Every structure is written in C-alpha cells, then in structure tokens.
Image (cartoon, rainbow, N blue to C red; front, side, top):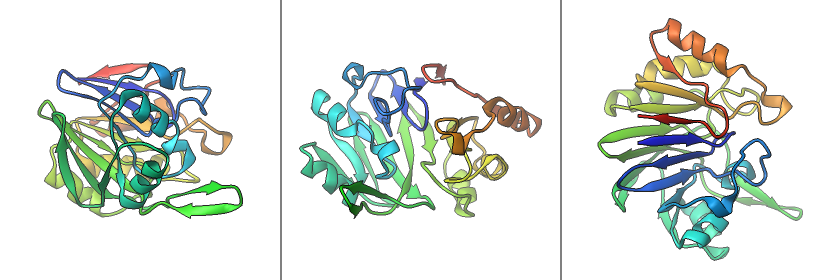
Length: 227
C-alpha cells in the first residue's frame, strides 16, 4: 500500500484493491504540488467541511465518477454541488470497492462560508480506513480526547495521521500523547506549516516519537510511504 502526502491534511491511499483520497485540499494549497485533474481514485473521503479539507473534493469526485463519503450534512452539501455521495455518520461503518471506512469522533467544528452565510456541515470526524488487511487512522482536525485510547485498543492501527499544528487543532505535545494511546505502527504528522499560525517542526516531532519507541515519518508534500 502506498501513502502519498499532499500537504496540510491531504492523503492519497493507493493499493491493488482501491485508491482513495482524504481531505483533498490541493489547488488552494500551493505547497501540495498536485493538480486535482491528475487524481485518479475510487472514492473521496472527508473528515469535515472546512474549506482546507473539503478542498477539491467535488471536482475530483466528478472527474472520477466516484462518491464522496462524509458525515450526513456534509455529504448532502456535496450532493447539492452535483457529486455522488455516501451519507455517513460518527460510529458508522460501510464497505465499498474493496475497502471499509468507519467514522470516529473528533473535537473540532465543521462549516463553510458562502457569501456572508456560514453553513453548518455536521459534526467533524476522524476516519478509520481498512484495505488490504491494514488499517489507517486519519484523525482529521481534532483536539486530544480520551477515546483515542479506546480507538487504539479496539483497532490494530498500522499508520496514524495526526494534526500537530496547534492553534486550530492539537499541538505536538497532545499529538505525542495521542500517538501513545493509539499504538499505531507508524505516525505521520499532518495539518502543520500550511499557514504561519500552524508552523511546527515535523522532524522534531518525529524525533520525540522515536524517543517513545514510535516510528514517525515527517513526509513533505508529494512524498510517499509504503506500508
């Protein structure tokens, strides 16, 4: 399985069974180095509705004639934009095209502004994605919360993607504790260095993970990891 990081929280997962992209904030993020038109996937997965996560989801879904998976209100919003969708909600799981997706809690918010109006897009979430017998956990945008320990206990997580930017999500200290609780085989920091407000040192964070006996990978936009 190949995991390619496109900056911020965007992640492309490619396997022999399926290819999916999570939170495809590409064209609005000059550091991503990816063109939405070049993305070939079987599904688009969204953690929440903020513009830096919703990103190019609708365009990618239309280009690939594939569904967007999202919490109910977010899926409805994407459907109104002309995309195929699969309505989900927190705690629910489903299988599609060779993979299983389960939505987990996250502590954040989820909305988008159109004109002068904020549109509520349901609750934020994390994603457990299982394919080829391996499980990935994308925490989305979240604060540290105690049930991360339960997520780690109930699921054998091969790779976890954790925000470290602080200010808008948990920072490195809380993400380090989350990594301990999740007991993932590999941890990849995300949601940092996109904007000045979330500037962090991903290499330093991974060095701290190593001191805890945890494998950390500070991927740069466009870099991949095999798992």
